[in-house]
Structures are given as structure tokens and as C-alpha cells.
Image (tube, rainbow, N blue to C red; front, side, top):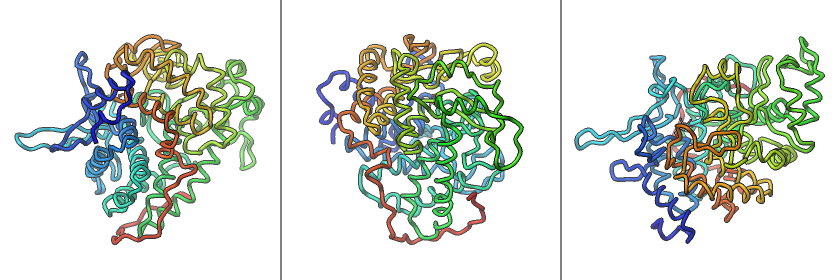
Amino acid sequence: MQLNDLVSSNSVEKDAWTAIENSILYYRGRPIGTLAASDVTIEALNYDQCFVRDFVSSALIFLSKGRTDIVRNFLEETLRLQPKERQLNAYMPGRGLMPASFKVVCDGEEEYLEPDFGEHAIARVTPVDSCLWWVLLLRAYVVATRDFSLAYQPDFQHGLRLIMELCLATRFDMYPTLLVPDGACMIDRRMGIFGHPLEIQALFFAALRAARELLVCQGNEDIVTAIDNRLPLLQTHIRQHYWMDLHRLNKIYRFKSEEYGKAAANPFNVYADSLPYYELDKWLPRKGGYLVGNVGPSQLDTRFFALANMMAIVSDLTSEDQSQAIMNLIEERWEDLVGDMPMKICFPALENEEYKIVTGCDPKNIPWSYHNGGSWPVLLWLLSAAAVKTNRIDLAHRAVEIAETRLHEDEWPEYYDGKKGRLTGKQARKYQTWTIAGFLLAKELLRNPRFLPLVSFGSFSVEPASRACEFEIVETNTLYFG
Ligand code: GLC
């Protein structure tokens, strides 16, 4: 099918499709992904590579248009890049990890793929989210094509299993959440989101649900049991300990500290002085709430992170009431969270001493810029998906309208700066692919809410089949957290 047949008459959308088409990466003659950005005016660094997390936005819009070949090729090729053996050298990527990005390298007549698992990336950050996105994309492919055979192939089952082993392995930890280093996700810089950041937990929850549906083969019973044990604990933990609204703020405000034992009302020993109570008291609408950014020992990071909150809604990590409360918050605090460009990656920005200490004086992450309170158009599709899921599509329509007037004219920037998102990001790439794909996907989701199940688990669900595949998993010496 030609893309030209698919596009609507809308000229902005037409241009967006042309830009997406131009960003496609070919490998041995086959389309296998999209470049992060196609901006020739700035040094490419690694923006001329295909990022796993970035490609998901492109992939979903391709799937919605029936263009499944590129997604399938991507899934197959990235699966080949996943390390399958235990690594003896600690600098090498662990078994099961998926790369942050990859590029096509030409060696004479030969082409090969070179992955980056963080060993080249600025600050050597670990892309924990890549393997989670990969599982979600594999499920989206199955939902779109209704073809289980790819996911049932032994190599895919094995890859899924390795990812689950990485996620569910016994660790130095006592929570059902996933313990990760800083910058392990879309925010791939030091931003105080190490430990148990919501940005990872929401993806983790969704990926566990997706893997639960896709892992059906003989020999995976132990993993399936581990997932079944983990999912309810993770969901309850997040709904309880990450939730913030006026009621909860009141409770935390009057928390006692230094409680020992199981009956503690303040199990993480959060100290009152560490929370911006009075700002939150002003900011929280009566009927609004959200999941906080991080919870750990004497730590409650009250920043609002958009991707995770939207993903929590879409994947049912939040309860129905909580999901509605998050949408209420977005509506009531529209100027802060959406402003002139949907939407803030996190809110509020870290400022002054806090900015210096937490980011390490990162000049790219100065207050209200880039990851530190910048506005990222790619989040538009997640906002739209959450709006469709909660039946609040008026909010998504408003957001898309705001974005539409500027994105095309500004040549699809990667991000915007400023409290209201009025400044094109200081170092933003133009023709950033996930900005373009995010916009198209948001429009598509509003036009055709039937595409929501590509990422949601509500009404339509890929049923675990009882079919058995003809392969056996050999070694299982990992213990699982129940
Ligand atoms: C930046 C972003 C990251 C993105 C990459 C490619 O590093 O922080 O989330 O994947 O650019 O667009």
C-alpha cells in the first residue's frame, strides 16, 4: 500500500507523512525503522540513528495505516541485536537488554547494524525502557495484524523470556517496582529519576501485561507465574504509594516519622519538610490528582511526569477514579501542563540549587528547558490515548488544535522551552520524527478511537492461547520476586 493513498487531504498531515517517509531507515533494501531526526542544520550526534523508544510512535501510526512490514522488520532486526548469552565482561550489555538505538553501517558491499546499549550514549545511560517498549510494540503488532505467529516463533518467545528474566530477577530490593539507574528512559539524563521512577514503572506494568498475553509457550510457566504474582502487587503499590491528591496530601502532611514495623502509616519515612506542601495545596484542584514521580526511602518526588501518568491511564495501572482525577488535573491546570504546546514532560522544573545538585548543572536541562520542564509534542499522542480511554476527548481535541497551529510552521521541533512552551527548544532538532508521528497518531486516535487497543488493554485483549510451541527453554536458575 502506498502512503499517498492513505493520507487525508489535510495539507499539514500530508507534509507530515512526507517527512515520516523521508525518515525511514533501510537495511539491505528493507525498511526497518525511522531516524530520530532529519535535521541537516545541526550536528547529528546520534539523531541519525533509529531509537527504539522513538520508533514506537512511528510504528503505531504505520500499524494504524496497515503498513505492518516496517514494524515487523524492526521487531525482527532488533530481536537479533538483543544479547542472548550471559556476559562475562561487566561493560557489556546484559542478556535480554534492548538497545537504545542502532544504525546501519556500510562495509564495502556489506551492510550491518550497530547497536548502542548505552556504551556510546552521552553519560553512558542504560536504556531500561527499550525492552519494555519492544514488548509493547510486539503486542501492538499482534493486535493490529491479529497474527500471533510472529510472537509465537521460538526466537520471539525466547527474546520475551529474556526480557522478563531481566525485569523479574531477584534483586537487592523489597518493592514490587523496578529498581533502575538515572536516565533509564525518555529522560535519558541525570534528572533525579533513579531508584523507582514512575516513568519506568508505568512502562513496566504495561509491558508485564503485554508479555503475559504473548508468552504462551511450553516452558514459560515459571515466568507466567512470576508475572501473575507481580502484576497485582505492582498495581496496588503504585495506586497506594504514588497517588497524590488533596486527601492524600492531608494524610502525608500529618504523617509521623521514624515508625518501625509493619503497621507504619508512613512506611517510607517521608519527612514533612521535604515536600512542597504549600505549593501543592495551592496547585491541586479539589477533584484532581496524579501519580508522583518517585517513591523511595524518605523520598517522595512530587513532580508530575506526563508520559508515565498517561501510560498509567492507558494500561489501567490507575483505577478508573484516579484516571479521571488525572484528566481533571490536566483540565484544571491546563496552562501549566499544556500551555502553548502539549505537553510538559514534567512539572514543575527543578530550579536554583535543586537544579544544580540534581542535574549536575546540566546546561541543556536548565529550568523550563528540555527534560527539565520543557514541552514535548510527542506526548500529544499519549495525551490523546489517555483522553480516549477516559472519554475526555474534548481535552485532546483542544491540545491537537494548539499543536497543529505551530508544529508545521516551526518545522516539527523536538521540544519547546519556557513555562508555557512558547520558545522553540534551545537545542531542539527540527524534523524530529516522533514529533511528527506523535502528531499524526494523536489525530488518528481522535478520528478512529478503535486504534486505542494498540496500546490499551481494556475491551479487546489478546487472549493467551493454549497452543504450545515446539521448543523448550533450557536453563532457569533465576528466582522470582513474588
Ligand atoms: C534525546 C531524548 C531521548 C530520545 C533521543 C532521540 O536523547 O532525551 O528521549 O530518544 O533524544 O530522539
